[in-house]
Length: 289
Image (cartoon, rainbow, N blue to C red; front, top):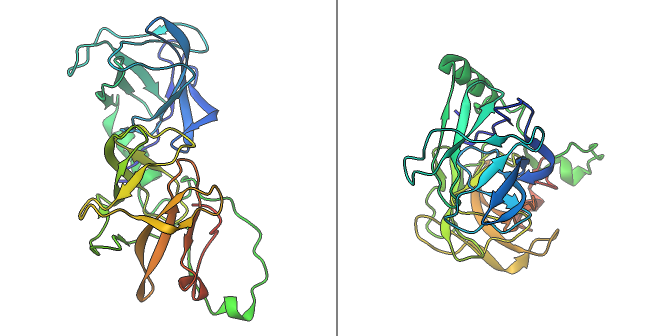
């Protein structure tokens, strides 16, 4: 089963969708709620990626405070009588389009949440159909562009097609960065918190999740191999789109290993190959990843 699951969430009171396509979090529509916390009132957009703790808010969210959430449509408070098993704060339930519900803790910083389905067999069938590696039609790819007429030199290039699984390795210790069928990277955010970033291993599939908060449009402070702890940033290269630091990975392509570069800025989808490899290999729809 595909490890990154994007949930479609609705209000448990009025059943209105809480998905906001205008505010993306983790490259997916955010779950929009009205929030009151520490005598402040505003809006929060939670990540719809299950087990991602990223969010965006238009007010400061202090740690260890209990928040009150309201539906932005019917204005009803969203709360349950259940308590968090980790910190005893109230759990906040949401209904899922897929059937069942997901609950999160109302205490800021607490990462306790759970998911439950009314009909487990139906839910498993839904997720298998939507998120297995063989089914990529519902996964977000880079926009299709009209193919240009190829030169004779381009005709000789090998093409790595959109949706191809990238067997990814550390350029230092050469060990695989694939864990549980995801690309796993050790990261540090701007606040100095360390954790892990899990990327989809499919070319031009943008889904990802992290164990620490990564604000949208902000660069990651550091990216390392989770085996040897060596930094993956490249000193003499910058992202040609946003000028942020880029990280170098290695992927197995055709009959050799090639250098593969990704941008460190959250939300920037640039990726590319080395000048040497681009002479013989081209990435399908390679403008974005």
